[in-house]
Image (cartoon, rainbow, N blue to C red; front, side, top):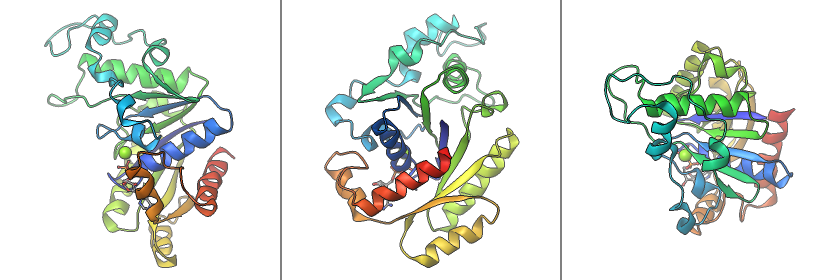
Length: 256
Ligand SMILES: Nc1ncnc2c1ncn2[C@@H]1O[C@H](COP(=O)(O)OP(=O)(O)O)[C@@H](O)[C@H]1O
Ligand SMILES: [Mg+2]
């Protein structure tokens, strides 16, 4: 099961990504959780204590590894480098292990001009492609508001792209842009999850905005998420049965 999760900043991508990863792990699956959002917060959503998070070095900052594998200097210009760096061992080497979950934080890449083909981005693209096409583990990729890191060659390995939307025009417009970017790379298995829903109108508003896409579920707005966050606990900690059930149903629907 390989899922990409996208949506506007703050809609609840990491909340959903962490919940699905934790549920899969709870079911005994080995899970690779990839934080591909430069505004990375998947580690906290998984409940990894702040003290331990300091030990997580984003891939984009693993300069020695990137230089060794691409044969090029990070921040060097006009160099030749391997477009197909060896990455098969990177998940094992660099992932932060937390219960049954291996977390990889990709980190931000400074984009220089158009079409960045710097060693960091080539390395990360090769890594994501390896995780999607070669690895057997369940994979959850927490993305930014787009399809960065995915390409035509990798989308065939993605079972679904889940776009999280909250009941507001900005989140909906952003979701439509992501749907169109996904279509551009041939990714049409796009589904939606409504989050921070406060009433039936909110849910209808979201359903109405995406008549041709499956809505996997609607997660209500709940103070329980903020409370778990402030305690530094995982997104599933302290949820009541009804809320937990919604995530279980979403996972069931997307894996069906
Ligand atoms: N259903 C919800 N009800 C209330 N707060 C939520 C809900 N889902 C997410 N949040 C809160 O919204 C904030 C952003 O969520 P997060 O998952 O980090 O978003 P993203 O990864 O899309 O930026 C967090 O503080 C989170 O606790
Ligand atoms: Mg996030």
